[in-house]
Image (cartoon, rainbow, N blue to C red; front, side):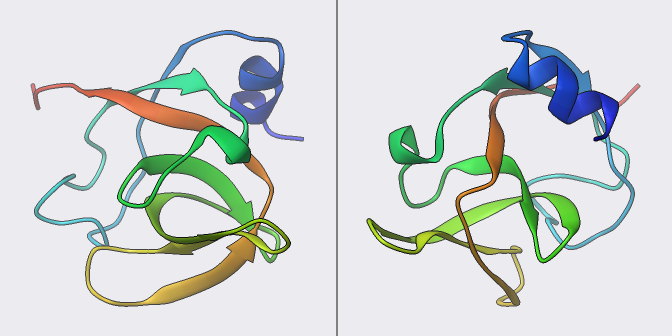
Length: 98
């Protein structure tokens, strides 16, 4: 289990940053975000969440919600990663780039 999941599961709010441009223009590559723990049931469409889909962790958008399947996760360019209930945190603040 990675440190982010561990801390979020322990109820801690963390600062995270990830490389990649899949969330442009909302998030830039390695832009810091504040993640607060959340359960998938409390998320809604268009939330930005830290989750695991098919073994990969992402900070991506919630594109859909289904009581049986969980949340449909995708990036900001139309790519869909898949359904998951493995949601650990929600972005509560996007921090400015240094």
